[in-house]
Length: 234
Image (cartoon, rainbow, N blue to C red; front, side):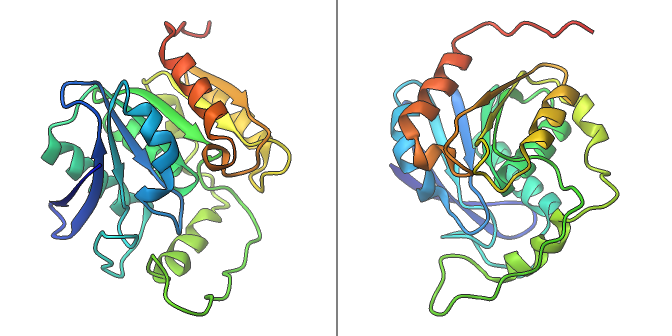
């Protein structure tokens, strides 16, 4: 695993972990809130056999800068800056939870760059009643300010994030975590109906599918990547 730090246009540094052959198809992995690139280690090892895997520490997490300013849009722009700096195109983009929301924004903003999109148990912000948790004691591997900044943003009564899903051109796989996930699974069904080319698969492992059932997650994703995508009839 190769570690790099990329300077992006916002002036902050984003840490990445890279594995796989340099001429292999690119795959970019975006983690959940409070996690880091290391969270993908088990599945990244498998994906690196066929892809150039780039796992990113989103701003405020891990080895990336912790600038104190956090929005989904800033994270989107950071990742696009990494893609620019590394010269990545025709990417398979995989995002989990918060990283899934960021991945959706990237797919909307950079339609020509994303070849395939995988969203793990995530959907755009929606109306919900969620309080900010209390910071745990001791040092953390991420900036707690991310929680206080992003937490209120995931509660969005306007649902303004949902209509742009129809603009996503990349064939998309949604991996749902099933009934034990805290994410309402009916929203994943709704989201998959709004994205023009989208398949929904449930792995009943809870919210952290790739961590709880890595072999099954890899099998589903690689199986989907190996097939030709058929556009859903209008």
